[in-house]
Length: 327
Image (tube, rainbow, N blue to C red):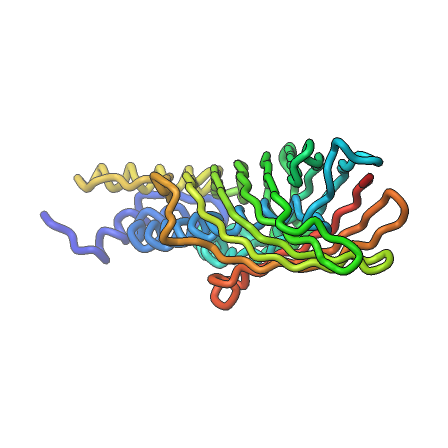
């Protein structure tokens, strides 16, 4: 005897015994699996895609120096090098993650998020030729970000380097003007959960970029402005699963489906957003600017970066503060 959809749902509910009320009803989840799964998957796909453009922005903001060129290491008196620490935030569209979390009844996830990043870096001037070289690195354990507007568990790793060549070395009148190339590798994860469900997003992003920067020291201040173009290759994966009481009731609902001769539904899923190669048809153009404040060998730098392609729809922008020793 065939049962229609409504009668099937009633039979499943009758076959499952639940003690107490749960925010996420595993029985209802299995009964309406297609609707739940589609909402979760589309939301996590959107967030994985948002990370593909936000992570490179967060990384390249970390080795911005006020001086477009710091000078030669040798021959020079004094020789020119420096290093210090950088902290920054990047505004990220997390509406896709919020959509998936809402479907899984995970609270604390909002439609946008200020993604914090911090690094240590070292810049060394060139030998004879007017170039400089910088390396930046950062690694964390799992951090809770509830103080930044989203209740997430985040882990981060980034390493990158850039090379700049001075077209103008600067002087009493002339500014400094440099062009350069850089590379960053980033990986990490975003996790969210409740007593009844959890989801996790892992990202791995390679970024190459070219840039041009102009700066001019005026007394103890160094204003600067620059342009940058980014291309990325990424492999961002996601998964979700029911757990706890929701999983128990979902398994019971699955058993009821099997008893009725119907196919059992999944209580977990996974997917990915990836690019096989660097996409030179999807260049991220950026403009960045800021101000360095010099005090003897110390330099404090404030900078902001806007992604010109994604600023209007995703609100993709960054801000950073750096404190370095520079000689």
